[in-house]
Length: 134
Image (tube, rainbow, N blue to C red; front, side):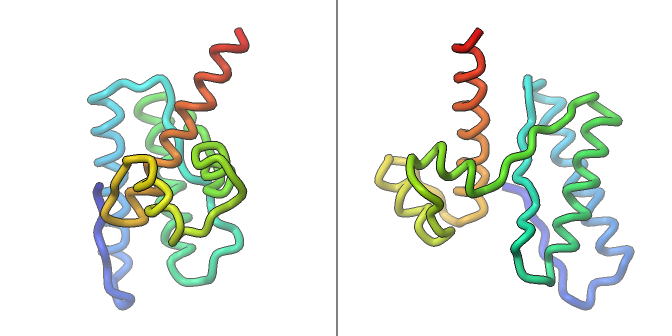
């Protein structure tokens, strides 16, 4: 897990440096593992204002960087759709995910990690289904 918190009063330069750092870490990981696909959680259009713009900027920088440097077009999935496929029912709330995964024998310390796992598992599940169709 990679992250970097900034204060609300962070300067534009600090925000740009964070975008470049996080995007660089994603590119390092992709280049080191050479995956067939990369999945990114789609934007939460119903989310409250605030960090939404920062997350949107990060998503744009990561998608652009993946394309320019690796020629990878990321697969986008909404968190609700990923949760439904991976967890097997409806659209559980964020607070319900860690206990649900724990029942499956998968333990994470925070919601960011559990969300990332669900998105990755969604890609595995849907990629497997696509392969089986062929």
